[in-house]
Image (cartoon, rainbow, N blue to C red; front, side):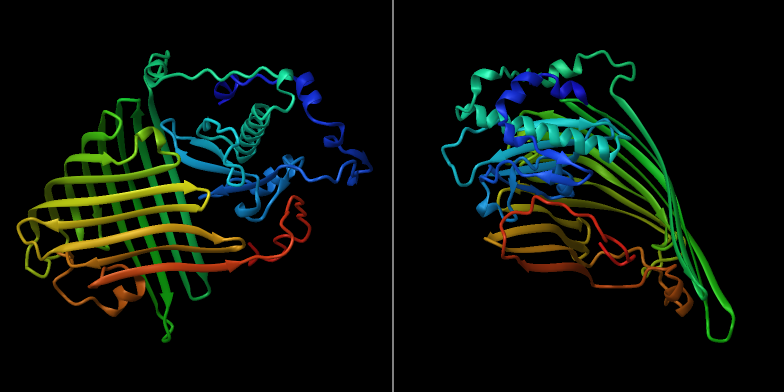
Length: 435
């Protein structure tokens, strides 16, 4: 983690000279601060599609003014979080200047938080990365630039692949999780175990994974008797991708799973896969628009005969996916649309889409949406018999449906003071329902 940032050299003495004395508050007592300078500072707005420790950043970087709206900020700090090859997270930081088009542009900076890194470690490194980028930008604008010497050596993918690694870039991630809810008349419990193995380099991507899960449920009915049920599930997946230039990738995917709920004793589908990214893959932290196509066999083995009276069947299928991902000053978008179809019977198909969308329309006004929707015409795995009331109550058998939809829509408007630097945690979350 530290190796990514060690190329930025900031001496303590030059840093002290660059910040005016007013930037260092005097203290008296545990929480008493004497304001030395009330003049406006550089206004910041932090934008991220996922949680990125905004309260911590406002406290650690309170030398600057934080705006509640990007339309009033001098600098918009855009943070992207993505899974890394090592099993950790890659943070990428970009800084835009919407009010000053002539302001110096900075190269995005990134660091990788390793698997198991605490939120404390992540937020500390994120704050340091943002601070160094802000200082660099202001130095390029001519503010005390002679006091600093900054360098940031960059390494190519080939150079990173040449590093000595006793594991040869293989990463293993076992996991175990459980959840449950219960009351005097019911309980619902889920348990899962799994293992993911991956090897990711600049040219190749290999990901293998599998797991097993069990669901237990029970309800006390009106006559005093108790209904109980349990269903199991398992899954496995293998993926290989080979980079072909800046925009194209080739490979293959294979998926296997079983689910008592879905009447699947076993299922396998997969085949060759091709993907085109309209933007270079190197810009993945800020924008992606990928079109992917796959085709191959689709095989099912059933616990009970399906509506066609079959206990097993094999069909050819193909699928087309469009994936968009953007994190910009105006907001963020994560969206996928997919069409699946059986080639031997085109009337059996599925259209699905899902999105997480946030848009800042203008000062103080923002909309957000999160949801999924599917038009389902390919449920060939359903049980041929009617589903019983007990199975519906215990949620142990899938029932027919033509569509599935879920979503959350939000509209919010904020006005008043444009700054929100102060963080006061008193009385936060004193009730379980509090955010």
